[in-house]
Image (cartoon, rainbow, N blue to C red):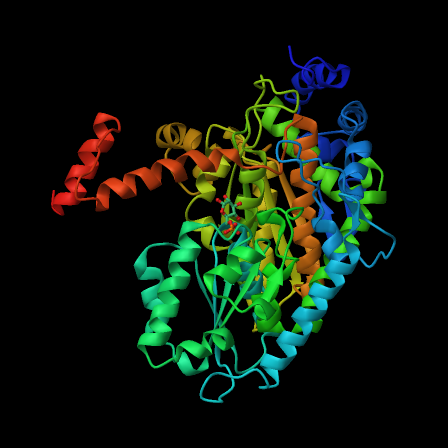
Length: 547
Ligand SMILES: O=P(O)(O)OC[C@H]1O[C@H](O)[C@H](O)[C@@H](O)[C@@H]1O
């Protein structure tokens, strides 16, 4: 038995889960009229209704006990204080410092990082202003009309998805494009439409070693020069964001045009750093600051609210509850806002790269499930596709429904319909429909009793399916910042409970190394072909160029 599963709270939760599994949420609502009021939390411009979950007051007490036994408070403090909680890389984890207004010293390896954060934000602000005001121009003295952001993983998803979410705040006259994949199609399709004279490239790579990003940047540079861009103008058209400044200089980026970041910011937590430069270019620095402010408001809530009134803590506890006591292998994020259609993919990287771990902080294999599969999409589209599985599939798939109360595009009845669908789905998941109800409905429609007997079981909706509903007045930079920070902290808290390091990602390394050796064999005149038989066969077919 591991440290975690032998905890008194874990054992108690195991027993308690057996009890809860006997009750239906519908009955819980009927017997407790105040449930919806009690099981809600407001913070940082967000409102969480978690009443449609399979829990009661006893569950909440056990969550409190679990948090205490896992030393959540101490570990949270350690993260905010700059302790090297990413112990496998000996790194502090300080994305929260990037959005903090606190000026008290924050030491990493004996150095106060506050000044670097401020000076980088100032540099970003000045750069964004000079691009917007047309002071920073292209080589033919025209203002920039397009920005191509080149980066992948954490150096891509944040800027792309947040800029997309904040489209109502876009500055006129400047369009941002994103290239991540090493697939030549990705960059070719982007460059086709662009004019090198008015295109600015932002190359984002924390490590400055990532194959995709280096390759795409070289291709962009070749395209720039092949289409009339003079070599001496590369400095004007290419800037970089990285923690590896020497490598960026060696690559040919002008030292003045490098925006620093630091190894104490994880890639998937880095949109608040200069990695967010494309967001700031798209919406302006002032709005970018609002994004940071929203996140800071969530940080403050996370640091100060007690367990059962703490939004990220409660969401994490519920995620653990379903993963470990209800065998739910996945979690779905359903955004009822077209601007937030990319958010599930963002949370997918955040959570799955953070908590997809099988070894705990004591260097032992875990004997419990950790990070579930995170997936999702935008409502109402999903209702006509995968919601079937959530409603009637054999497993439990906890769902987060996210809805702004006011639309940026109030159009007739659209928004009320959107909201009605969102609430209707959570209601259906919770209440379901019994066999008797399904049967009676069929009879009422005139179906003959024998056919109704056969059909009714297929129309049963078991209900008792958990969901959270997250509301905000409107999708703004501040509420978006709070929302993303909420999921960051939710991810962290799950990692604390599971006793894993949420801030490394060793699992992505082996594939890269093997990929490099395969690449040699694909291109070499004398391939070594020393891989397994299947891979060797695939390499041979690729070299032949036909099946
Ligand atoms: O920013 P970079 O160093 O180029 O890294 C880009 C991405 O690639 C890595 O393989 C990791 O899986 C990601 O966490 C990271 O964000």
